[in-house]
Image 1 (cartoon, rainbow, N blue to C red):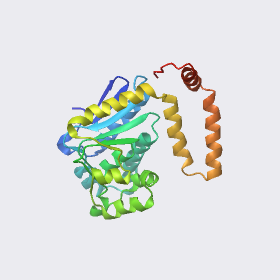
Image 2: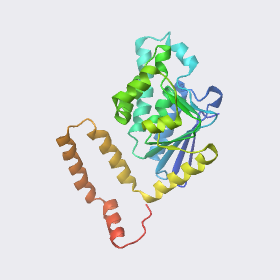
Image 3: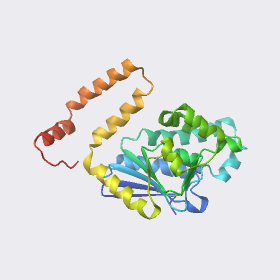
Image 4: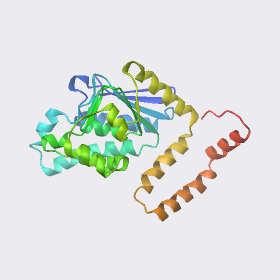
Length: 257
């Protein structure tokens, strides 16, 4: 059985966690399989949008229990190597040049919540719970902290991380952790429709450049970020996508990317 399934349909790549018997816990093998799947999606010219989903009742329960037991006997170098593998996966997803949508149909907890929250957009069923429970077992949500502070702000992240409490989908929506709540019987269709619409109505180049710009300007001061934005603006104007888009708009034609 493959720990991760990959399928590309109508320019949308579906990456599915396939370890439902273990609540899609993030074992080293699953992390490696996810990394391989995203590498495949990056090279897949037929995939403009990525949907990350999971089989079973839980999106992901976080770290694998058997793996947590092993960590107790690892030395520092072994633990650092293991942590770096998850770091690379999170960085890959966060900086991915294509739109990444999480389709969450069950609880997303600890590292599983981190996995969902670093995606560009999150669709969730109303029943799903979200939370970073690491502090309850003497651990810390270190890697996701680097990304989530950008998304939610320090105050909200402290509330979530320091309490370790789970929140429901409605609360997660209010916090800005997720973007849409859709009933379970409809979420697959809603995500499919949204993803295929994005694939046909947006420029892949524009998506990639916009994501890269947002990632860079966050740590810049205002003047530097404006200078960077102006350079990107000027560069994109000469691109084939921009010229094609403007010409089509001026000619009142329908553009399908």
